[in-house]
Amino acid sequence: MIDRFMELAIEEARQGRKEGGIPIGSVLVKEGIVLGKGHNRRVQEQDPVAHAEIDCLRRAGRIGNYSNTTLYSTLMPCYLCAGAVVQFEIKRVVVGESKTFPGARVFMEAHGVEVVDLDLTECKELMEEFINNNQQLWNEDIGVAP
Ligand SMILES: [Zn+2]
Image 1 (spheres, helix red, strand yellow):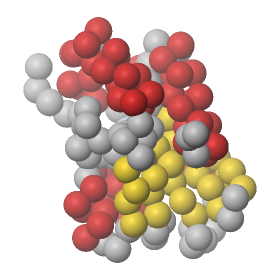
Image 2 (image 1 turned 180 degrees about the horizontal axis):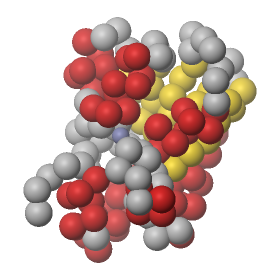
Image 3 (image 1 turned 90 degrees about the vertical axis):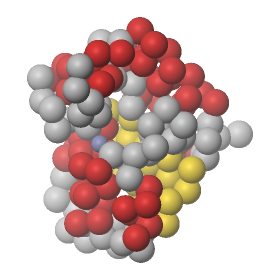
Image 4 (image 1 turned 90 degrees about the horizontal axis):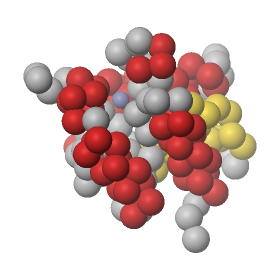
């Protein structure tokens, strides 16, 4: 049985895919309460920094203090999103997988963030399906030259 917050992040990822975007979802949780949910909207909004985690933090709004928050993401955060995690002192990040993209795990851990990788087949399949069908779009997202 998958963590219920990760289930919400996966729902967000699926929503993003339905919109024609990149299937990555994120949820911000504090003491069992969902503060915000988001998904990658780079394609939908033509916004290169609209990553799932950033979208989630935006939608959570100005919560002030990030102590005791956990950021869930269906995929290991990239350096952009890991930078936000470190900047806001989010101490715990739970991810769906890191096989399709290794992300910035080492960077976050070097800054004292606890990173938990659930290594979920469901999350890997979401990304594999997307990457196989949209190689160019994916490369653009992670900053790889065409
Ligand atoms: Zn990112």
